Image (cartoon, rainbow, N blue to C red):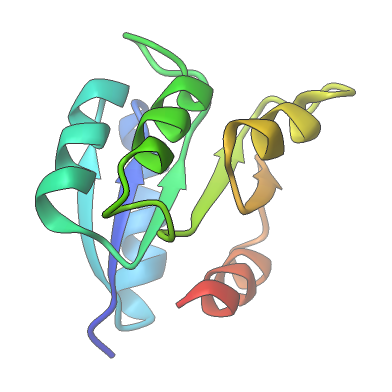
Length: 120
């Protein structure tokens, strides 16, 4: 398996959990700590899948998703929102921004892997 997954997540603990989960499942992983770095990384590396946190330090994951999906070369790249935003309407906002799926934190590792495998 050689699929490349971009993790856009500002919290080191969350990045480590996702990194360990995905690399142990055979995926290649790159990481970004800010939305801007994530957008730039997506443009540079053209990942097979993006895991997008919503609450980021520079601008939110909704805007990052819109920017990524606005790029014709990245428009078909699946983006899964992985976020602690779990209030009524947050999932709909993620889909409206262009996310293809939504997973709330805390997530079950096995369930997240199933969701990842749906897209890569």
